Length: 212
Image (cartoon, rainbow, N blue to C red; front, side):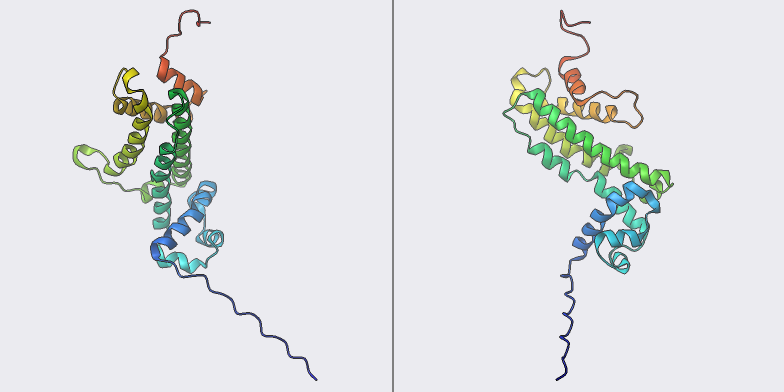
């Protein structure tokens, strides 16, 4: 009696995704590769990281530059940073709230810098970012990306409103600007998060008896 081999199990196809879901999945796989390899990363490498065929990329992105632009847009998207800021407990001291917030903001800025730096090194940043100035010459996308985190920062000041010298909204604006300027690439001997928060809350002058 001859032994019949059992048929190989059929390969199960991955569940179908909506185009927006597919784009998001590809961008999530591409982001760390863009940071590591810059614009020279191949779509084949991105496809392997995403677990898809290379052709699938071009079903949702017309070309590689469009994919790189989507990576840059994802890096600057404020949703994650806003969610982290809104999760900070308001029952802890203001200094602790701001220290936690500063770590979140600086981490977000570091990711933006890593993606932008990787693309700029290959001369591709201008090609993938083409914002159009709005009224007054300002970039609406940039302002929108700053406004939501700024509102979340203002909420962190709100419990101490009566003790503040300025309104929470104005302090949030100043604190955001301080974090952005302190996080610029190549800054010599950058301030730590604790130093930044202490400087913001207490100023440059030492209290009597603290000067070294």
